[in-house]
Amino acid sequence: MATKIYYAPCYHAPVGYIEQNPLDNTDIWDHPLHSEHAFIPPMRMTDYEKGKHEGHSYFDCPAWKSYWANSWVVFNQVDLEIEYDKESGMIQKTNFQNTRFRDHILINEGKIMEGGGQVWSSSYIGTPYKGNLVFQMPQLLFMWLPKKEKNIWCELAAHPETFHETGLEYIANEYPFSRWMRPANAAYKAHGSKFKLKRGAPLYTIRFRGGKNNAYSFQRYDKPHPPRELQVRLNQHQALKQWQPGISWNLFKKDIEESKCPYKFWK
Image (cartoon, rainbow, N blue to C red; front, side):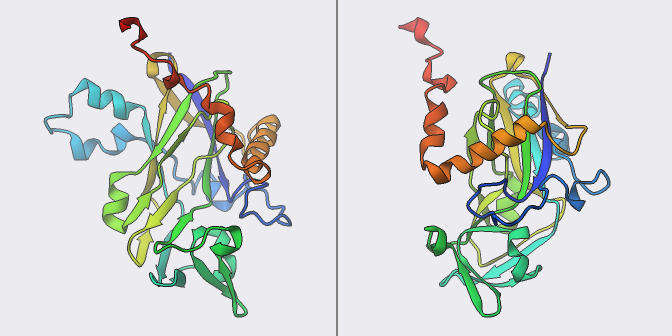
């Protein structure tokens, strides 16, 4: 039986995140792009990529299919166009109003003119520009399990198309979402000085591991808001790094499944 995983799209960072305006009480779960007519749901990687791989020598390889059968492609929900100065890190052209830049990107390393002659710089949050624009997108997927399971992990990795077509390097990561409430999101390091991400383009892939039988179903929750208890835990876990930097990873790294050697019977 496949391990059931729910997801709910949310827009912008949850309460407590470093880029979140503390006076902004916007409901992150309620956004026009989340409507059933607008939202582009994740698609299993083997379905999305079938036309590109079918007929190749590796297509029927069980190991290849097993790996990608547990992966889903996450898609961009709204067009994004940016041009910036590589020397200074200043964003010069966008397809959105700079005064509302946080609705489109969260800048980790870079600068932007907000309006009224004011410059917002990532130096204000302790991460100065170092030659490449580094940013996140506030299109998030919050994931959880309806049944309590302790050690289900998600691996967030690049989709091959993204770098080739945009020059954006996805910043890969992994974490045990079954016990650490954190949404999946797109984070990039820009290698070129301009790029475009069209609506419907792949942003990244999600691969699951750790479940029984290594089989998963990934479906949208049938209500706009996740259970209240999970929302509270999400906000707590997201904000923790501001109060105790570095503690988040330490809380669960002791329990990583790889810490137990699967071949210990050889010793």
